[in-house]
Amino acid sequence: MTAIASGYFPAQPRADRQAFLLFTALVWLGVLSGFGTDSFRHLRKFGLDYPWIVHVHAVAFVGYLMLFTTQVALIRNGRPDIHRKLGIAGAALAVVMLVLGPAAAIVVHGIRYAATGDTPEFLAVQLTDMLGFAGLTGAGLLLRKTSSAHKRLMLMGLIYISDAGFGRFLNGFAAAPIGDGLAGTAVAVYLGSDLLMLGLGAYDLLTRGRLHPAYIAGLAWVLLLQATALSLLPNAAWKALTLHMIGH
Image: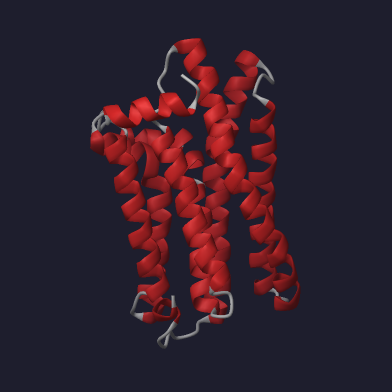
């Protein structure tokens, strides 16, 4: 952890304030385009038939995204004092999401399996998403006194947990020509969020000529978890385990 925070990294406060606000806005775009269109189609066809835990999870996620945006705006407007105070609420909400996310996914998969017979192996993606969010956000909170590491890890945590929004709409256009193989699945699930993370690295290369050690470590964590999730999806033992997880 010390190695991630150590080392000189040139400050670019004015450029960072604009860039991190832009990255946050792009996360909003992915989330609203994905969950917005998906929810509209579902409501039009089935109405408000989501399990209660899905509604609670949605409120928690939107609340975290709004709080994150507020935190970025506070730093942009020179109010780190309020930013630090709200950080406690953000940390608490992140913990709540780590409980609600897996619980909501298991409940939904259980209902879907009972109704259609669809097996829940996609839990590999959903659970590694939560693990990725926990690792990146937890490291970001631990390194909160090192601003350059803190803000990159927190942003990467938000981007990682937003991949479901991108996957519901934007990623589908790129994945459709590729097909249903491993490459198509990777694009369908991770393209939008991965492009944002790579964009963060490109921004640092353009403004500093180097990558932050925290970014490198965070990206390695992301790639490890994504490779793990993709390898589990076709695995028969994993499918059996997920069926056990939903009570079948």
